[in-house]
Image (tube, rainbow, N blue to C red):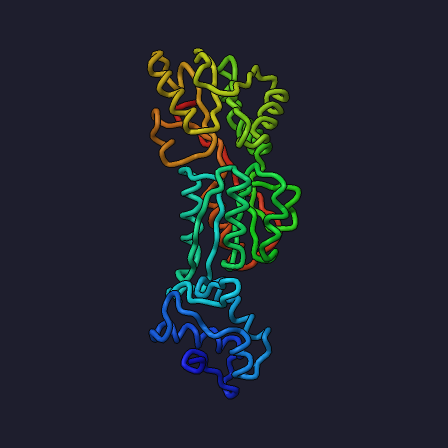
Length: 334
């Protein structure tokens, strides 16, 4: 049975571990083995062809990262997938799904080769969910992209993964500085965005930041307060918006789409015109904000650019830290 699956020739120019990989792929495409079938063990292959165990392990590990093989402790290796056309498998662990993360994801996969498979999961700001996702998938992917959000103490979890296959996205976190990262500088982006918008803010009597804390980056708050202090802008911080009064002459900076929808509906009910009676700035841009309430102004990182940069990092095995582009976009709400 072993020679029906593995074919190795000392006259072949291809490295022995590559011949093992290709043999198993050929056996799958020829229908010799199918999903769920057990394949010969590392020792069986090494002994049959007079190879070192390390050579066989190298081949099996690559097939595992491509998702073709899976190991069951105490039972050996089995065919996990018959999709042998996939050369690279990437695991994305995001915090949550929303419209701008979808833009990031689409830009990422649009800039990857066709023979790449991307699996996406969400930890929903839960350390236990995050830990389970990583533990269950360690060793099964070629690349791991982690969006840690506000989770702390995650280095021991991420250290389960090969350190040269991990990329950090969205936040610069002290304990993860050893890994390549594409990040937002939330403090700087808020400060710079409001500085560009400052001439438009002058016609309003007060600027309100809705900042619930929790999963929202602290940099939004520090950048906002620094701007208001430097520019002598009258301001206030709310922990939420839904139970607060909406007052003519104020500007509202909203970090979530739910807050934006709430404010738009209530302003309509009160007969307040957005962009005239009150101002609105939404954090994180999306195509929908071009049309909502005749256009919502935003301060936002460029999520499409982040996806493109991530693809470049992964494909070219880049290292270091790159700050993603952020900008203020003026629309009719300001």
